[in-house]
Length: 184
Image (cartoon, rainbow, N blue to C red; front, side, top):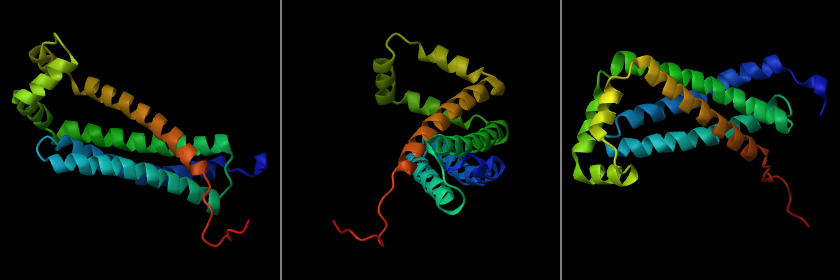
């Protein structure tokens, strides 16, 4: 592969477009997660959206390589990282809008309802023995939106890193096409 033949500006533009698609799936997953306390099925739909976004990113990487420009290992990761970062920026912005204008305390109320159920309380106590959940809840409720968003952004960056590595690995796998003969 020729070093001069790769157009980073073009690849970045495609990554931005692909990031919109992956980001839309991440936003759908986030929206489902916010209401999964009330409707359990939404939790499963959100998980499905997250898994689907990984397959979509792999497919978009393969499509880019097939139709636009060949990708070496590091360029493939660079492209996957850029797609994931655009998706992260879009998702973080949507999360900010949600907590600033839409949530209105819904997440905290749902968490309170969940913690009132004895099975969840036992589970949390077994996971964190000696923790005072009332204090944790008070600290969480007093957290300003900026601090909450910094936590979400850090989590989103971690997800982007993991997704970019996984999608790079899976997009490098080349399966034989149905047109190829299987002669030995």
